[in-house]
Image (cartoon, rainbow, N blue to C red; front, top):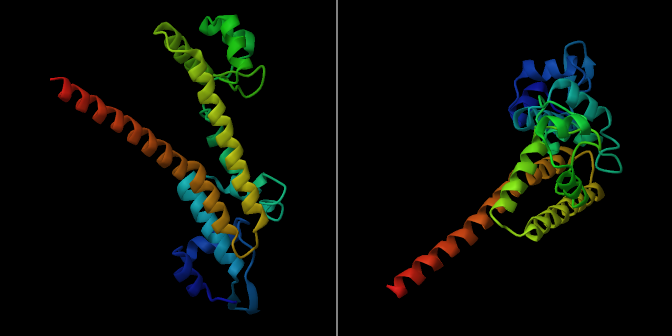
Length: 230
């Protein structure tokens, strides 16, 4: 189906000036030119505009990141993870301005117990960028584990927590593979919105809600128990 630019604006809620800017920047393909002043746009334009809008508003992605992702659009949601490139910094959980240390520098700077560090790496509780690239995020996790140990919380609980994090990561990968299997140019932006919303919205919502429900039930049970005792 073909659209006038006014129809494109109406369907995407993106101004004409912005759409033309995206075309100039190479984020959108050129319109089909019928006459010198008559242009038509396609369903692909609508899907791509929705995708660009989402990435900018929800993910804070730059034009360069989006352009790189779109250049690999035909491979994405198939066998390549190139479309996830704008998300990888966020998914890494490492702030973009974080200071990086070699393993030796990290141990010296934070006065890390080498045996504890090795144990946390083996157990997957620490997941640095690579074997010789550490940040203060890893240091904060080590301090947390030290606090756990100081108050006598069983280390096996932490390992179980990590185990379930790995299971969740595999489930998210399976969601990505399911999306791959139904990909088409028509549902392009919808599939990626599903992936992004799952990773950054649904996960936080579900985890927080279930944690709230369990802790709230424990609180009610404690209040009820105290009431009966009194």
